[in-house]
Image (tube, rainbow, N blue to C red; front, side, top):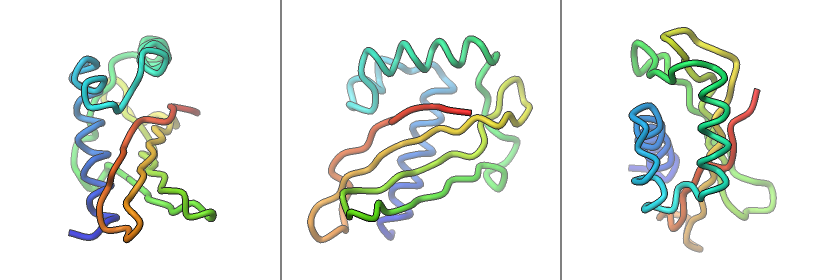
Amino acid sequence: MTLEEKIVQLTKETLVDLVNLRYEKLKEENKINDETEKFLKDVILMQGTLTLPPSDEEMDIDVYEYNDNSGFCAEVRYLWFDDEEIPIILFCEAKTNAEKNEVTEFYIETIDA
């Protein structure tokens, strides 16, 4: 599995945890902190019920390496609320080891329109 595939997999797993309201699990895995949890809950509450897309093909996840080589950004574009695609993006960040073959840190950065 390539590094990009690992980041995509972590992003999918994180989204599934969000959809299933597993905030404690996300905190235990250091994917969110208290501040991020509150922000996510507020945004999700305003939009409706966060749902998964009808198929994996409709789950669009892009991975970008930062220009300064400090890590990677994974974007879920777009999120689904009440089974409708809404132009809201989930941003996750991944840090790697020096060889860039292992993810050492992964967390939700923010959610934005």
